[in-house]
Length: 488
Image (cartoon, rainbow, N blue to C red; front, side, top):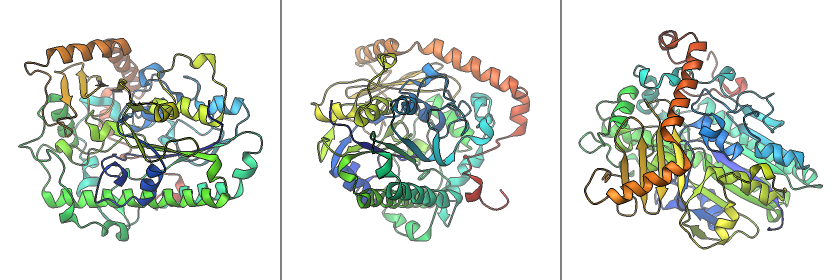
């Protein structure tokens, strides 16, 4: 086991790894994240366990698959009683654990294992987005698409909130970190909301990118996008049955790129405070995101798909004993953060965690590249039934409970333009992937369990018709009141 150190976890929201310099994007400006990657190990293929906020964060906290803890959608937030979090494990062993910013659990006073929360953000009213639980019965939701069409320069409540998150984290590092680590290494978790929509960013970031120079998304027009029924439903419910015009797409991309650069600067402020504290040499840093962003690819926006742009995430680990300037090609996952944080801080493992699917990212960084399966699942908005993903070697297999499967060769086809699932010559690969997936999950049984639970919650909310008639209560979770727009 490596010598224990402090751990700084930096988590963004909706950051596709395709928009980061350290992952090969030549246009976006992310100097602080790129420097972090150069000083440590970057994972070339890292995946979230479900491409939507709330269940992804519950899975990250507990190191368990979403279906294991019954977190299906943005209305099933982590409470703390489903399974222990890494916060529980560390606190029980005397480590100081502090969180700053977005957690997206149920409530501050729940037994989540994170008792020291600074400027926290949780689901709205302790419930979250019940309207999205309608899934295939949800009418078109063009309010979400409006954030693409209305992308612009300006200030938003999320911008104000992220600045405050950086301020609070930097202050903690300067004023409290040294005392916090006198007995045991500390863990500081910093959850930013950028580059999550709204696509509004201050003018200096918005105009940083020449819109005509930005690369158009893969398969962004209706002549090229996938006609799989799951993606067709997604577009209909977004109100996007015809492609957006090129100028709108480029403007939205410029705002997103600007938000990524804004995020990078906030992270830079936190890392500068760590250096100023003198604790940099005794601290390991992890950067990742809860899921990605489609950014117009295949005619889709936001997340909620198993395409790489939505389900794959950036993942960087840096600090003592972490190989510098290394690209690890072993598949990694967000469930790996649970054992990683415990190991880096020097916490003794619990026998109750012996069967968890995650592995130490440090051991993956130090070891040779190896074959490892990656898994993700989806049971939320813009889908009728469960969707399950398996990454196995060069192939990605996607099982749709109510539709045809998808199969992509990511080495030959990184943009996932050619679905091989039903093509002659790939039957053996498809069967092998299905066999491996069935060892992880009973897809049909989990889909049934998810839908039964969602139906119970809809009934408790007054029934499907009442929830549908009430319309969406939120498009994105508002920050704490002091950062909200006047009159919200």
